[in-house]
Image (cartoon, rainbow, N blue to C red; front, side, top):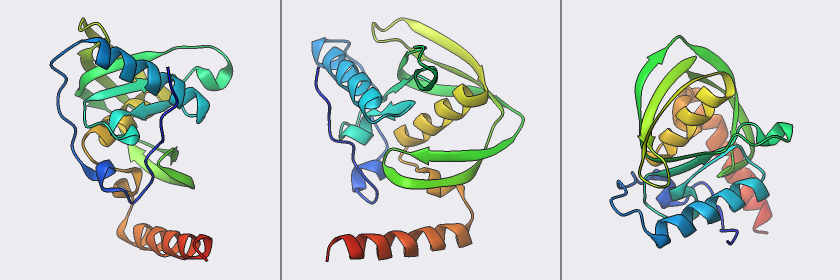
Length: 170
């Protein structure tokens, strides 16, 4: 296992839609293991493959890790098949460090996909897990949390980001 570099905004790979996984081989297993290790080391509650530079529909999530108990989920080729309700809550992203914002998402979701061995799984989720699932599936579709905020907030973010990163290059 290895900790991989997490790609940061505005790297183009974060805006690239990922491809379905067709082979469940040792290369995929290594990617999953590396993503799990990277997520825990970050520390985060979720990680999508394009965040570590791989354009495959693979995500790992563990919302229990912040409470010291594992509830690890590995999702391959996931898709949301049902959404209910609406929830506005604060969100952050490992690819946009030191930034959080209020994001509107579904309150409950049902997601289907495959586990790391290619077996079908279905997850009914609410709360933090629902938010994490939607966040990671957005990544797999080339979307970032800043794509879920209003135009004015997004402009403030871009100006602040440009200012902070211009200062760090001096």
